[in-house]
Length: 296
Image: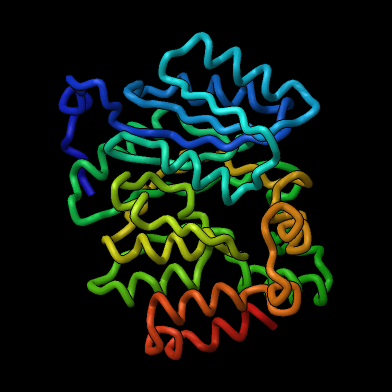
C-alpha cells in the first residue's frame, strides 16, 4: 500500500491526542528507563502514554513517576496491589482517549518511526481496524527454534513441531468476512496483540472476564471490525528471554492471572467455551481440529 498521507495532515488542533499508548509495568527496573526514552523519542509526538504500575520492591515505580513528573503526556497510575497482566492491559486500554490505541510491553522496543508508519497506514485505509509490523526477535532465546545443520534428527523434529504449534511470525489478517479473518487469527499467533488499532473499536472488543489466552479472544473480537494490515518493515524488537512470559511456560502464565480449575486440566477450555458462545457453533465446528490441537 502506498502511503500518501503526510505528517502535516495529522496535525491535531484539539487537546485530544492522535494516539494513546498503554504500558502496563511490573518490576522491570532493568529496562523501564530505556523503554520510556524509546517511546518518548518517536518521530510522531502527538500521543498520550498511559502507565499502570503494580507495586514492587525495586525502583520501577520511582523511575516511572520521575518520567511522569517531567512530561505532561504521561498519565501515571500506581496500583495498591498486584493486579495481574490481564487487568492491567485492560485498565490502560479503557483509559485511552486517542483516535488510535496501541499496547506495548515494558521490555520491547520500537523503531523511531513505529507510530508514524502505523498511523499513516490506517489513515490511508478506512477498511482496516488495525496495522502491525514485522518483528525482530531479540534476546537469549531469539533463535531458539532455528533449525541448524548440526542439529540431530530428533532436535529438528522437535523444532518443526514447536514452530507449527507456535509460529514465530506475523501475517496480514485480511478477508471478505469476519469468519475468514477470525480463522486466520485463531490459526496463527497472538503477536497482533501489539498492533496499532482504532481506539473506539478496540475498546468495544475488550472482554471483562479473565481466562487463559484472553488476548486471542480480544483479537477475535477485533476481527469483526475489519482487516489488520501488515507493514513490510521490522519496527519492533520483541524481547525473548528467560523473563518473557510465554518463554517461561504455561504454568508461569497461570501464576500471573486468575486461573480457573478447568484450565489446569484443559488450558484452552474456557477460551473454547467463549468462542462457542460468542462466535457461534458453526465457527467452532469448522475449527474443531485447532481446538483439539491446542488442548492436547
